Amino acid sequence: MITTAEFVVRARIDDQTLAHWIAAGWLLPQRTPDPAFSEVDLARAQLIRELKEDFGVNDEGISLVLHLLDQIHGLRRNLQILVEEVRRNRRPITGEL
Amino acid sequence: MSSDPYHVLGVRRDATQEEIRAAYRKLAKELHPDLNPGDREAGEKFKAVSSAYDLLSDPEKRARFDRGEIDAMGAERPRARYYRDFQSADSQQHQYSSTAGFADFEDVLAELFGGRDRRANFGVRGGDVHYRLTLDFLEAANGTAKRISLPDGTILDVAIPAGTRDGQVLRLRGKGGAGIGGGAPGDALITVAVRPHPFFVRKGDDIEVEIPVTLREAVLGTTIDIPTLTGRVRMQVPRGVNTGMRLRLKGKGILRPDGTRGDQYAIVKIVLPEKSDAELEEFVRRWSGGEDRNLRRHLEGAA
Image (cartoon, rainbow over all chains, first blue to last red; front, side):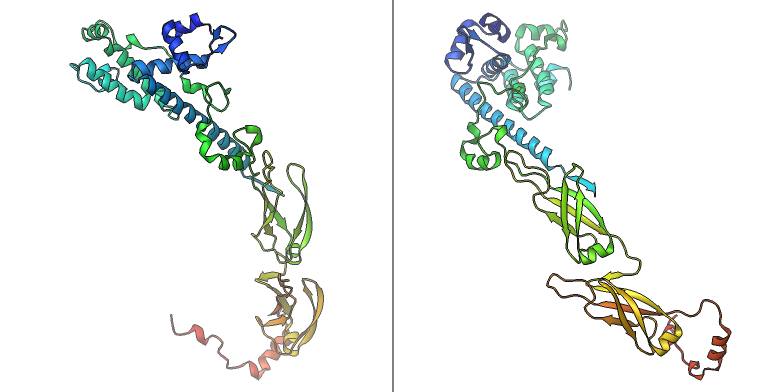
């Protein structure tokens, strides 16, 4: 797990920004009881920073983008599982008796 | 892709910072891996675009690049993993995972997956399995029961219906691949090949057998012993049969699904003695009925 101190450095944000993102519900660190972050949180923070700085997305926009992105990933994930199951079970088998 | 950052972003060398930012946002929207999770090439292209933007968005760096003090590679931003890289089906579910995208077609998913979205609850029908089975002519014509062992060791008793044809496909319901998570098993599809028989020939529901007869038998008639699908029968060959003549044995053909049968045809073939026979030659020479018939009139004239 990643501590808060390490997280802000690697995500290139300051403590205040991090607190704001957690309060907005964009990041959901584990509480043990201090916040502990994962690589997923870090990648998500980098995405948020790019959305804000490079794309100029405002706070309402960030919430919307994250909400839709997580839905897309959920759909893609289940589609991938379904496709793999179908491929595994539908492969025709032929044989001579 | 070109390494000239102006070219990469598609802006003029005297573009304003605002123009550069607008060009970058337009490209990044199309190329950012997290905004295009299905595009595997997006990562490489985005790297070039964001590298160019890193250089040109900083007026100081941009000025140094314009003076030739640093090259275009000087500003590449290292990036280990994108958010999308944590989203594949093989990776762990995490606290951001959402199934909200399914809310409106939950019924369809319940049918497909047998639940919401749990792998363990999938109900997928098993695959069909294809086999080839070669049968003897009489097995296919009369029907039989075959015990066959599948490659996975399963033993199947297959009822071959009477009259099974070459190329016919028998479907054994539920004998294919196992279903997943309570899904129905698939079917076994058996394509039948029928070996030819030494003398029976199938024509639809009828059976043809060529019967060689001597000249004497053809001229005078006889009674012969002839094989059928269901055993040997006695058959009258009337006087004066000729090569190619078809003698019908009614109801000795293939059993049809409605219980009736096709017919068997005995096709006459007159066979002369293998060696020349002096007596026969002498008889034919003297035989007045053998004269003046032109059997080949239909072959004359045209060509």
